[in-house]
Image (tube, rainbow, N blue to C red):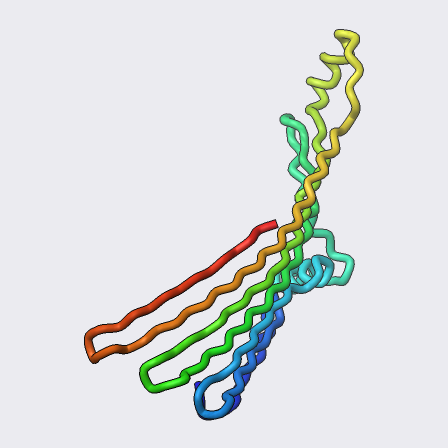
Length: 171
């Protein structure tokens, strides 16, 4: 878009975000977009409004108790990302752009696992001491970064050259 500035905002059950694009000199534009999820506590509360268990302290923890034991888990997650792009058109036949991306995701799948009572009783009967629960810690933090550069040239109506170089890292 080389003609006018524009933008938008997004608010939904999972995230908030926005986008802005600004032209410069009639020969290019810059675009920036960002998104962010709500912190887990707010997401859980919003989901509780949808499923009818409304209240800021609504507990949406997963607890699957049975004769097979139980798993108690309250996953938490958040993400954030930002994108930027600069597009220039130095001539009617040439276009070049640079794109950058940065994102972060935090996910915690930690949980408590309990053995079935009959299994625990059998092990104790054999003289084996077992804890009443096992805690599994499984936090995951991911950082993504990306950069891309592109150049294209229209030589004729039917012949075009396009060169793209990019790099992405995942930490």
